[in-house]
Amino acid sequence: MACLDLFAGSGALGFEAASRGALEVTLVEANPRAVRQLRDNQQRLDARQIRILQGDAFAVAAQMPAASFDVIFLDPPFGQDWLGPALEHARRLVRPDGAIYVESESPLTGADAPVPSALEIVRHARAGAVHFHLLRHRGAQPE
Image 1: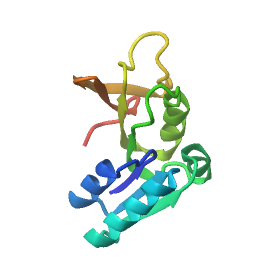
Image 2 (image 1 turned 45 degrees about the horizontal axis):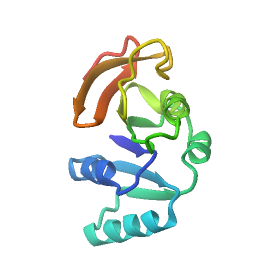
Image 3 (image 1 turned 180 degrees about the vertical axis):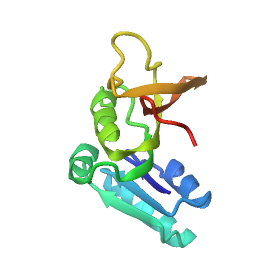
């Protein structure tokens, strides 16, 4: 399984995926201090299946080949209005039978939600102030 964490931050989602058997995990983070911490944690844990890329999430995603990942984690900074563009990149990058996990400050439902028409929400819940969603390509069969 190949995973992408497009806004890695602390790397919690990607490191968890690696600990649960993901063969390949790509973490993208723009903040140099966070990248140093990610690399330190990668080395400390000897997590060789993790690849860390420093750069703008959208620029990095634009360079990646389509349908490259089985699971994509999206947890962009709240209040930045980055979820729509992030979902467009994720739609292109996730394999047809893959999944996209999204954390957001509000539910991704309603007419103004930034969910591309090719994707559908298959699960939504809330934990405190965070809404989390699982999306798939329309018509994809869950494994």
